[in-house]
Length: 419
Image (tube, rainbow, N blue to C red):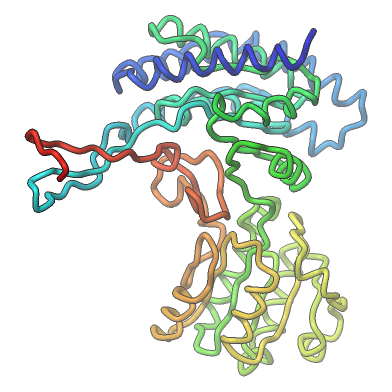
């Protein structure tokens, strides 16, 4: 197989699907999504049979139990895929929304309208449910999706895509709207990343290595976040009980996610009171590795020493870093140096200090008196998300349906000509 030609042909098919999908009504798109959900339920046994092939291969390759678990499709996860499709169908359609209209002195009316981006490529690892989730969001926003899952899930992804394309066809839409690079060949990604003018946007979902490789090789705009080094700053004006509750939740509720707290910053005037109680509680919750600065180890001596590199670390487990800062400016300077621009939170009862933190901290989500674990599209009321972007163009933070559209200018005249 000529991999270059294979990828080009698939991308062109997706482009054709995008043109037709861009004209589709909300009713047609919702019909397709609901049909997808119904077929996923009907063909659950087929999905599990194909998934078994990936599970067996993963175990033979010696993948960790955590990696094998990410691959698994059981009845519960299949139902979650179906429910996700139905939930997206129920969301408002952003396509065609006019976001502003104003009149010029010459009586021209100028406005902006939301339109699909076009062909969006999703490059992802492990979890086969991403195939359905990404398709749902792209399709509802009027975009064709070009899917490239990991080779470890190829049988599962192939079976899911077959279902999604059957539903697209039954709904009367172009099957190219859901296109799958059905090959384990890694060169397929490299070839796809060259297709500027055909593929409009790339969204990688996976580990930092994958995202950096995509970003470094793509000729196409990439929406990404490399990692989530999230901070909670306990201010001198914090309610200590609230601070303890938020810190515990931010670290232990689900430590393997990108919005979990990785570094705790504590204002110097309250560190002596707060650190011993919160460290004791964190350890009771299973946080076995806690690395602290010199000041924090003076207060809690049995912490490990934190090296500079530790403050850049996304642990993704029950481990964390701690630093005692001299004041809010010191905390914000630390965040500016070590943060991945994902999510930061301040715990304080002082309104002016809270608002200064919100204004001056430059991350995609900045919170006051809340756990970083809320940095999520569903929690923000977006209905669903396709990922979190920490860049500034064109989307930032959790990306829902609106972020999968762009805007064009629309102009209404009455015969005006420019002099």
